[in-house]
Image (tube, rainbow, N blue to C red):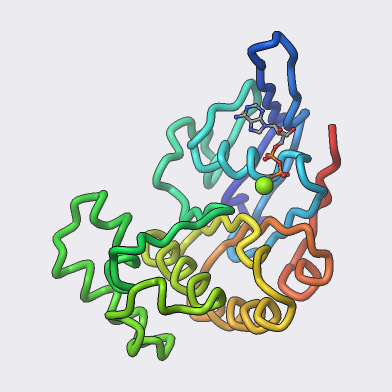
Length: 214
Ligand SMILES: Nc1ncnc2c1ncn2[C@@H]1O[C@H](COP(=O)(O)OP(=O)(O)O)[C@@H](O)[C@H]1O
Ligand SMILES: [Mg+2]
């Protein structure tokens, strides 16, 4: 068997609240994700799904446990994943192509180089006509496509997607699910996908993990 791209061992996250209460968001969680796999995590609201992605991406610190990437324990994981947040924000004053290069700007990659990459990506998905539009002119589904392409532009090898279609109506959502499936075939991507929709998980995934409330 190949080395997991991501291995999570006994991951626990506790939040210590100001009223001296403790919330256990994750309790001894284990998971392995292999190269090229699409793994979905489903579970009710509040069971720790977002917390899990935040910890994997290095945005939050675990209370205990171990996370390995390609077989090695890795404690500095920031920037090693394409992470699409649950509330993915497009900046209203930036055009679609400028939104696509947001993270590249933060990494101080030269503008012309990033814009070229952004335009190539839009072209690949037949979305080049939206390049100069501002987010306010886009449909909800289009906004999510742009957010997803922004994530892919930053890192197309490992995606962490937190309920990317959660706020969309059923028909738009289904269209985006099919689009995502096709999109990921164009890249050799490993994906960890969060949803609370079992039919979405079944449609997209190689494997589904159920996360329970603690
Ligand atoms: N920054 C925080 N401080 C305190 N409690 C938090 C914080 N973030 C999340 N929690 C709590 O941790 C639990 C898991 O939250 P979350 O990971 O957002 O769940 P999900 O994404 O599955 O809805 C919830 O009980 C939530 O209230
Ligand atoms: Mg969440």
